[in-house]
Image (cartoon, rainbow, N blue to C red; front, side):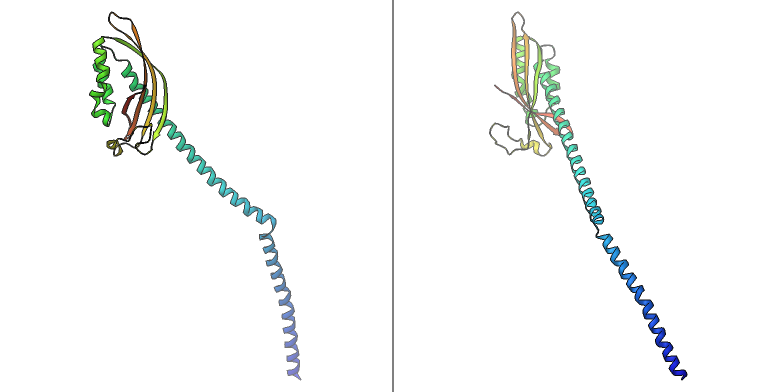
Length: 218
C-alpha cells in the first residue's frame, strides 16, 4: 500500500506542476502578443515613418545647403571677374600722353596666355594713337556684364575659341562684356568722344584673375 500512495502522490504533484506551468506559459504568450501589438500599433508605425521623414529632411537640408554654398561661391567668382575686367579696361581707356608708359606696363602685368605673348602688337594701336594725338583722355565705364562661363566646345559660333596654352594653367575663363565712353582732348583740337564695346576674357590662374583676351566689338 505505501507504494500505491507514493504513486498517487506523484501523479497529483505532476498534475499540479502541469496546472502551474500552464498559466505561466499562457501569460508569457499573452505578454509577447501584447509586445508585438505595441510594436506594430499605429503609434509604432507612425513613429517609424516620422523617423524616416526626419532622416530624409536632414539629407535634403544638407543638399540644399551645399547647393547654396556652390552658388554663392560662383557668384563671388563672377563678381570678382567683372571687377578685374572693369579695372583693366579702365586703365586702357584712360591712357594719356603722360601716363601711357605706366598704364601699358600695368596692363601687361595683368595679362596671361596669347594676349600676354602678343601684348605689344595688340595694344600698339591704342598707344600709337595717344602718342600721335598727344591727347588727354578721360574714360568712364558705363556697364559691365557677364557673357558666359567658358566651358563650351571650341568653335561654337559667336563665342571665342579655347586657347590651348590656357587649358593647362587656368581652371576656367569668364567672358565679360564692357561698354565705356572716353573723351579725348587733343592738342589744339576739339574734344572727341569714343565709345568702347569690349569683350575681355578673365582667366583664373592659380587663384589669380588675369586678362587672357581683348576684343573690340563693333
